[in-house]
Length: 112
Image (tube, rainbow, N blue to C red):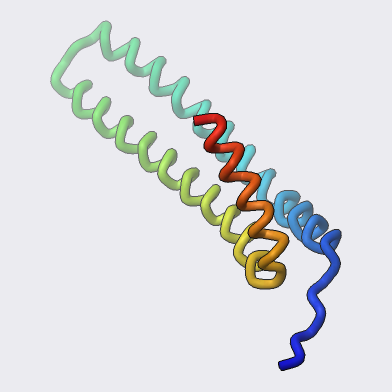
């Protein structure tokens, strides 16, 4: 079997820069929305503590559910970024990525 030559390593770095350049503005927007939502939730919680009615408890549960949904969607978005960053390069240059994975696992083990 004659396999086509894999692209040079700088190509993968360029690929990663392009992917991050495309996805990071949205990631920053999501982070800002999470922060705004958390601040709004804290303000509303303070207002609810002043009123303490049964209806306010229902609203509080709904707001918590909405915040949780946004956090889950943000987490899924970051997983999507990871898939776009690593899966194509892993298939194209297995040796480069295995070395990178080894370094990442070693660093994570040290941090733990």
